[in-house]
Image 1 (cartoon, rainbow, N blue to C red):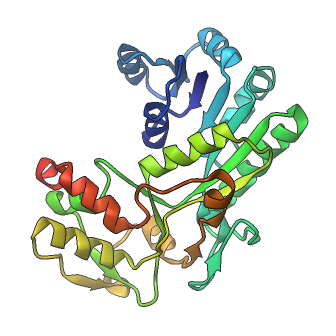
Image 2 (cartoon, rainbow, N blue to C red; image 1 turned 135 degrees about the vertical axis):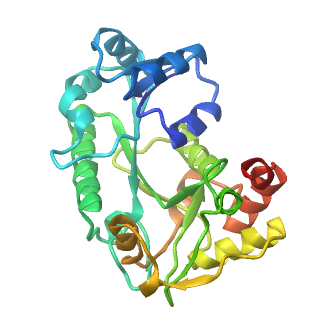
Length: 288
């Protein structure tokens, strides 16, 4: 099976590693990164370059993964490549989105049947992009699936690495919870969908336990046998506007559908299992 990825980033690489592909191709922004990935056996194309070779790889793909975010003008991939995607042989298209499209629910549970009420500009753009990808699926007969991800963590991106680098903070906003998802569980969910495609499907890709963010840092500190950083009240914390807007949304996200429909069994059902495995793999020691 041949894979084409728009946006060869963190989650996409986990998906690539999780399957036995006969050919992998995709896009990056920079020419230098494309050259490095080619040395690893990935037919990478810088988006600034000519489309000829890219078109050949895209045309032959059996599956397409999209992890490029939209912008104020819409979805940049569909604007440039919609006709080529439509004429490709791909029967499965996965679009990586965000549970941010649900907006704020004051700590209540949401699932895929919950109406999207995006609040932030980026989430509004994401939801609009979801709709145009679903429209493409309806128009072409290709099985387009939307994967709404929660906070992604994994090797190199986790509370243990933040602790080791001195960037971890315990910001406390009473009642605030977030879901998370290990990058390997994202890959497993995508692989399960690839085996059982459903046109127009929307899936929440998340762990079992929404938890206060300060609890994650506290647990990582316990694993590493270090003192946790001091708690900081949300109102007093210095944060970027984007980070502060993240705290403006509070919800618990259900993952029931990926389990019941796709048969997904999470390797890391909570942050505890995920961080424990990362610690054993040397994340804290290597990042120090």
